[in-house]
Image (cartoon, rainbow, N blue to C red; front, top):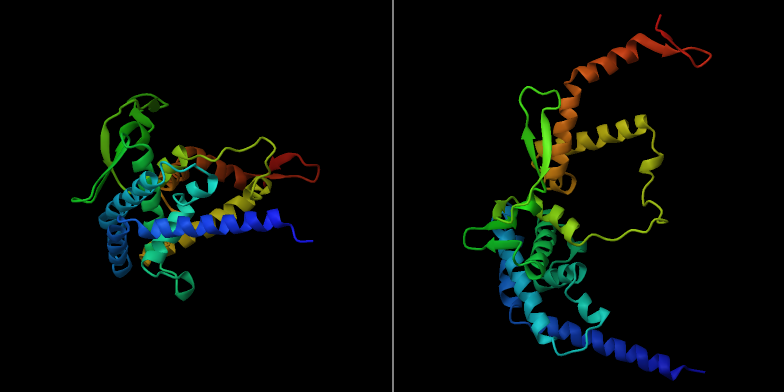
Length: 276
């Protein structure tokens, strides 16, 4: 027998989805978003610096208009999905007829994704994130952009000291800060029992070194060719880590480790002995 209740529920769900889609397409703020996205599709340079703030502001207006149009409706998980990252990305692509299967535009996808993140933070945290669309600038509250301030202590062995940044001043930042701030603001909670998604913890140090060497070479290649995929791999935090690694490679400690690996070996009994 046909379950009429289930059929009715399915039909109602489909009607709700159609209504939600129509509402998104009918938003007046779509026009500005569409125009800015078209500019992003046509340009291959300065997307992040010039167009990201404008797209983020347009996304913000779309979200605010959608919220206002649905404020009297009963909030459901489906209605909220329309203004979440994935749905906003799909909505943005459809406005300008961008279809991934026809060829992937990495630069366009990256600027849209980052602009959506910033746009959502402009809506949810207006005192902490702002944009200047006229001058193409992004502003973030100082303590969010730079959680810790590094102080240099002259004449001390441990010559760097970190202290918490408590400044609420809005400061201009480069667009790479957006991804880091978004991860903090919309962190996905994890369970203690949750299994890791990767096998990183099972890798030996040697395997990790080989993997790092391979990925580092790829990043260098992208940078040399000025390939936008470089920014899929590298952000400010990554560059900070690489700088620390570079400092380690130039330290006496690394020289000592290298000498130790040459001067000593393991004997047949598993004991340390001088290399012959």
